[in-house]
Length: 469
Image (tube, rainbow, N blue to C red):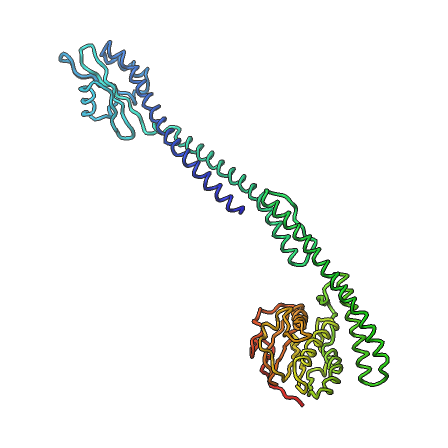
């Protein structure tokens, strides 16, 4: 907008300057020409009285000398009563032009080398006409014109510069509120809920700033209400959890009882984390600093040990690979455990009993890949499965499990893809970036898609061969 105003002001001012300066320059040139010819007529008029009295050469030369330079004035007197014609001064005009002026009896001009000549007829006492020739050089006709044009050009340029400066200041006054509005919107989009815009500038932008600030206040209020609601809903789970903990304590000894008590304790910790996070308005998955994160291999072994008992009860074959050595990732331990539980829980929830599944961990130079695959019926629409809040339609399906996994991967600059596994079912690949660089966007949900190779890394796709024990 700022440059648009400057361009418009420049164009309008330039047209105005041209519209006035060009005609004024032409008028100045014409005035200079009229001034030069007026001076010539005045010089010729000074000679006329002497010619009407005498035609003596000596007297006329003195008159011509007193009137001006004899190099610029010439007198042509025709012969009379047998006397020879008298020529005083330098003749520049052609004889034909002089004769024509004498015959017509009125003044005229003639073009001569280096300028023009004014021919003024003067009646003599003998009844004939003498001709006074006044030379007008081109320099006299254009005297002062160049200076006047330079002044006009300077004034026009000053007007243009001044108008551009004024337009630029006006543009800044209009653009700055718009820029502040853009910056405020960007900050609000980045999660800075305290971003507000000064209510300044033109009326329209001031009203836009008022509307933006009102919207930001409403967003803050809505988020606060949502956090309170999440905390309240999570707090309601404490009563049934207390009952479950008391009932689990009465189960006695045994692997099943210990697993039940461990599951209840973990559920209580998760509920406490949800309540604390909602109250403090902090994201559950935060960027890990230097030295932070967890050992992915250890977390995978721990969660597989938890789910293996249920898998054994349902007759499911399980495979675990790539966890024999530590694999450090920039993800909190609780977040990775929650993501694995969401994926493994989906396997048990959405596949028949006896369906095999596998978890593989691949450690690369700048990324760690966690693959969770099964031999179930697969996912008909992977794209829809990745959409937040869109469940499968069955009881207990909220559609948030895969979203938890996606947010965990994207917090490191990675991503999540769903494809077909060699077991015949679904394969979910979690790409965890180690160097924090974001990858190029990809199309999620494409079955059988293969990741493009990167230099120095072995490509891992969805159709990689594996076998179950």
